[in-house]
Every structure is written in structure tokens, then in C-alpha cells.
Image (cartoon, rainbow, N blue to C red; front, side, top):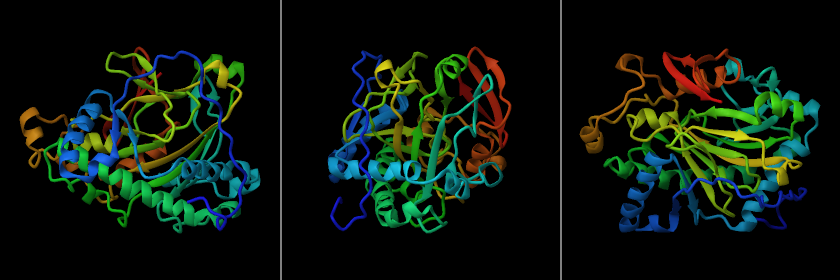
Amino acid sequence: MPSLTFPHIPHYVPAPPAPEELNYAELAIIDLDQTKTPEGRAELAIKARDAMREQGFFYVINHGYTKSQVERIFDIADVPFAQVSSEEKQKYAGNIKETGSYQGYKLRQYWHIDNGVHDQLEHYNINRDVNRRQHPEALRPLLPEIKSFAKHNHLNVLHPILRLLALGLELPEDTLVKTHEYDGHSETYVRFMKYYPRSEEEEQKTQNVWLKGHTDFGSITILWSQPVAALQILSPSGKWQWVRHIENALVINAGDALEFLSGGYYKATIHRVVQPPPSQRSYTRLGAFYFAMPDDNVKLSPYENESTVLKRVGVTKRVEDPGKVPTMEQWRKGRTSAYGKTTLVKSGEGVEEEVINGVVVKHYN
């Protein structure tokens, strides 16, 4: 992918890995090379199923991008933050609360974290249809590469994972793929995101939490692993554990839409972002993501009549009335508009709630 024909942009130098001994979660590793045969997919389906049910997270390796290609993606990821002026960022800021869409910039200090402290992260979101809206001038020459990155995530990472998870539900392999068409109408998008260091006063007021424990609202989140330790998951035992950086690996987790569709068989994973360990606190944390979700018109009803697994184990419905089950469009708009803007109600030790489209959504602090 990197070539003399591609536009020159500054090289992003990531932080060195954290030397501290952290309480890392032990996550399964899914080798996508094994998906090339029916036997390999059958074996991996069990591994992916168990990982999603027990941890809700797993790693992916052999995803088709070389180390140099990934470095180029992180060079591109830094452009909307380092090469775009504050004035131009304002011009391309998303109208998030009103539209229920993250397309464009989510600027710093948009979300309330705790005790009057607002976030210190910004992200730029690009629909996989990169021409859906205009972009800052510095990004325009890079759109062909971003489009290629989105297509690779969708067809070569997301779809193989969805096939494995469908097999885990004892459904036809392409069941979930059909609800996540590459050319379908959805808000599936690439996100470049950058966290900035905070003041000691802000750290104390938020108990070092940069983003409260939450679930993603889509189906599958693909995070391209980077070295700054900050991501934590809530383990089955109720303890927060760090997610380890593995070079040229992907970190995969389930979101609300997958929980809806699987009748609770695959649970949306609770995760948060906290202050990095001391060795990395002076660095920014740059991320590259692919947030996947079903097509907007997909009704988020469980496959309770199609899945032999769900017939055996039963389903956990987040919406009991079939007539009130949201479409993906309704769910994403409700979650996106409300996130970080609504007043949360405490419902237990370290747990806060809000209600979106009649469904209780929990946040963990």
C-alpha cells in the first residue's frame, strides 16, 4: 500500500509500549488465515463463540495488512488532528445531538465525564462511502486510501467474523453478512481518534477515567491495536482488566446490535478508557477504528426461530414487545444523540442508567 505515488504526509511516531506490569486480560486470538477452509471456519467458530460469550473481546491476526500498511494508516489517522486548523475543524464538526450521527468531527470537551470535567478526545468519522459528505482539505488527497481501508475492514475482517459468529449460533454462514452489506445504507464508519493528556485536577475529579464504562451501539467494533495502554474491559468476575497491545493485531468487541440480534447469546461488551500508566502519560493516544453496524432498516429482533442454539438455551430480549423493537437506525440515533449529554441516574454502586427507545442503557464508573 505505501508507495511513492501516494501523497506525502508526516510520519506519526507512536509511543513505546508500556513497561509496567499491568493486569492484562487473557483474550483469545483468532487467526483469519484459518477461515479459508470450511474445516478452519468450523474450528474457529467455536473459539470465536466462546470468546464472545466469556469475554466479549478477542484479537484477530493475519488480517491482510502488513506492518508498513498499518503504519501508513496511522500516519493518515493523525492528519485530521495535526494537519487541520481549529477553525477548519469547526467547519466540519458533526451536528451529533441533532442528527444522531457522528459523521465529521467530535470535538474536544463535547461529552461530560464526571464532576464537571469534560472529555479531552477528538475524533473524525468517515462513512465507508467516503463521498457522502465533504472533508477537510488535508484529508481529500487521502480519501482513496481511506476508502480502501474501509473496504478491507468490511469485506476482509468484518464479514469473516460475522460468518464465524453466525456458525456459533448454528445459523447459515451468511446470515449476519446479509444484514451488513458493503453497499447497504448504514452508518458504518472509519474513526480516527486522539486522546490528549489531562491535568492532574481533572484526573482526580474523574478518578482517572477518560471514558466511562459503556457498550458500543453497533454490532462489531474493530480496533487497530496501538501501544498506549488505556483500554480496559470489565471481566466476568467484575474486575477491570487492561487490553494488551499486540503489534499488527486487531482488537474485536461486540456491541448492542449483536446482543439484540443474538438474543443475548453474545453480550455487548462493557469497556472503558482510563489514564495510561506513568511511562506513557506524556503521549497522545491515536486510534484507528472501524465501527460496524447492520443496515439502517434492519429490525434488531433475535433469530430465535432460526437459531437452533437459541431454541435450546432461550433468548434474553431487551425489548419484550415485538412491535417496539428498534431498527438499527432508531437505535444508533438514540444512543448517539444521548451519549454524554443526558443526565444519568445512579442505580447501584458505580452504575448509572439512562433509557433509550424504552431500553435501559447502563454506564459503569
